[in-house]
Image (cartoon, rainbow, N blue to C red; front, side, top):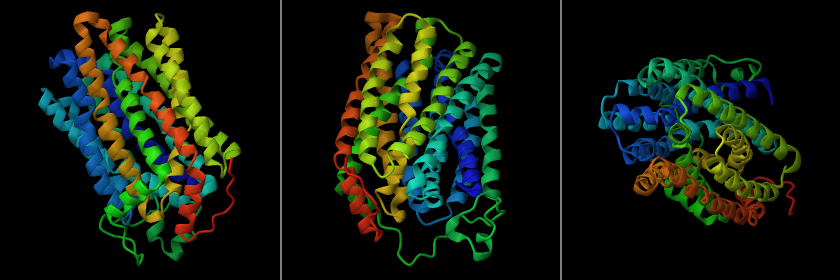
Length: 446
């Protein structure tokens, strides 16, 4: 990667950490919020699920349509400022309704980031480099957990969850300014700018400027038809939905599980989570990007078959995390779970970008996020909370343990979707390249 590419990934990495750390921190302090605001597990499930996901998904789709023709850097900067202010405001909530509405606002602010960032990365890097570059970007998950669990855990322990949210919102404002003044939008660079590839450019930003391309951005209906007609994309979309349902549903309740079943405080718990998730969430994407760059270049079928096998192994890891009695062993398994969980997400998103034309990239990512968040993030935490409440009369404090065990089996469905996608991906990539007018290049059929 060039220095310009490294700088882009570094800024997007920092923005991604700020973008997602509040959701991780919210899961960490659910038990304290439950007590302070006298909430049920079902209400907590609404806060961590549908309150955020519903507006995140629909607004994200609208902003992605904008990102497919507009200044993606301006979009990233603006949305970063919005979510930062609203995350800080969560600390002032005094009722379920207030916190619910603030989470809705955070979802609206964070909605525009991921599709715009993915589209920008796809423009900076070609197919051979895109998987590794996206893997570096996805490695922000590790930083998210270090901040969301490590820093937030001790901030909550010392100052309480209200001050914690106020402080978590501040770094995003800094990243917003950094993106605004130093990132470059390839769509609007002049010939003079093109010569300045060795350093950041203080560029002129515009929220209203659109690309001068002759062909307008495809209608949303055409993008949806493209996704539906592509067998691989259909399978990947099903996988993403089930992965989000089980993964986010479990993740939002993991801190509450360790508090209830193992009696841990948020400070100690945050440190352990920061180590397990921070290291695992960083190592996984980097390993996956390196492996894909060496063993799966132009062989995405192999990539998806290996991912399906890993997803089966992750199901077993998830079960044992909630079955073992020793919390330290559980955290060790959690770290390994995170490596497996994140190892192929960089190549996964690079593959999604490669299956659609440039004019559809941001919208395609937004559709994945729409379905994944509504079916997954929106319903996963809620399903875990409802199931925990239903089991409470029989199991008491241990009801959450068995609710999370139940959700773990859903990972097997995701593994099956990945396997099905591996059988069609090579043909679909050739078709996508031919329709875009590009040479198909070297394609290996395994």
